[in-house]
Image (tube, rainbow, N blue to C red; front, side, top):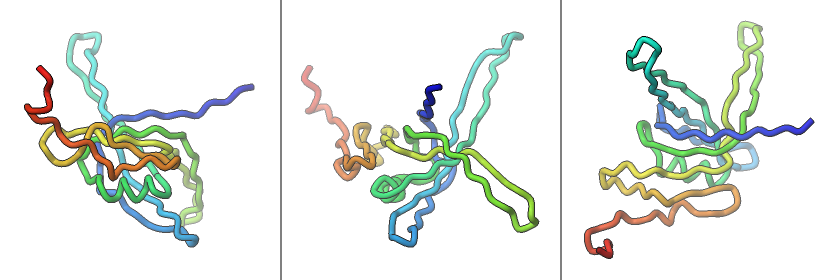
Length: 142
């Protein structure tokens, strides 16, 4: 049977990224992402739900997310679900799903904050340092 594990999320960071390093000096960043869903219920009332997702990125992606992102900023992530399980201090078994980020893209926030819509990175070597500057009236050809 074929298997496929792909996640694409667009949301806002729920906390500042937390950067750490593995013993072999690979960067690891953990952050939370909140995605919102709005719909109209059967009774005609507006409804909304928020989904909170833990995410983890490695290497250059981790360093760039840590450098350019902070709580409240929008981010598009693409990755895979990873199942983590561990034994808690009280002896009980704990587990959770998390998204392991393979690619991401900064999403412009529109406030002139320096976030470009075209900056992205992946483990393949693309570089988030080359952020797209905001367009000015002189850049518009009409």
